[in-house]
Length: 74
Image 1 (tube, rainbow, N blue to C red):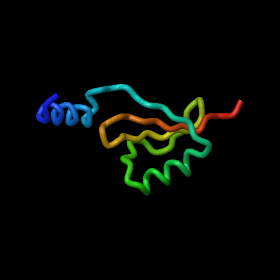
Image 2 (tube, one colour):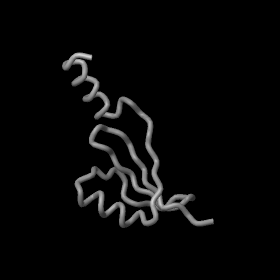
Image 3 (spheres, rainbow, N blue to C red):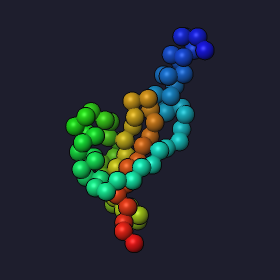
């Protein structure tokens, strides 16, 4: 695609047009949250308890919604 179209696509994606979410698991969500926040990642939801564990919401610089969870142990 040409540069103008590529810029329009990048802008639309950064505003969430692509939809969808990425989910990742970690051992300690509070440590991961602190590291990502210190690096300037946009936090959309602070760590919160869920039925499956504790998770945090983030937005990638290109607009992707990401959730990182510390899952409950069985």
